[in-house]
Image (cartoon, rainbow, N blue to C red; front, side, top):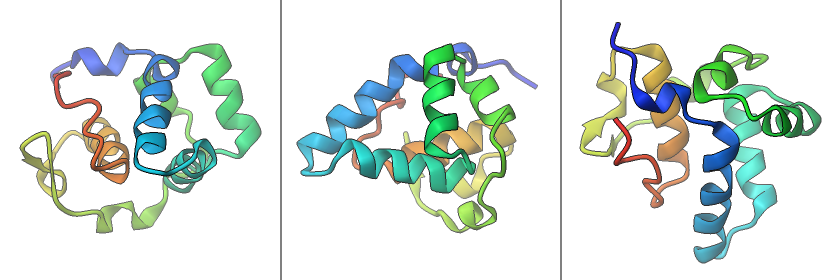
Length: 111
């Protein structure tokens, strides 16, 4: 399996970009957190702990308490790729999150 640069990128460094983009679209930090919690199963305290520990994306998803089984219903194109066709489970989970933050496409330039 190819190791992508994004896997070792700190989730806590990207998180403010999710919030900034959401706020530009009239959304709030709490809505961003709700999306992340829905996808990963983290509680708010667990999410904040992960941010404080500055874990990378790989660790963030590996330690997720319970990935939402309905995430596979997320369809569409992100960064020019159909999320439902991504074969690497970690990359697919990262792109699910990015897709949920649409129209942000925050991580499109990171491969």
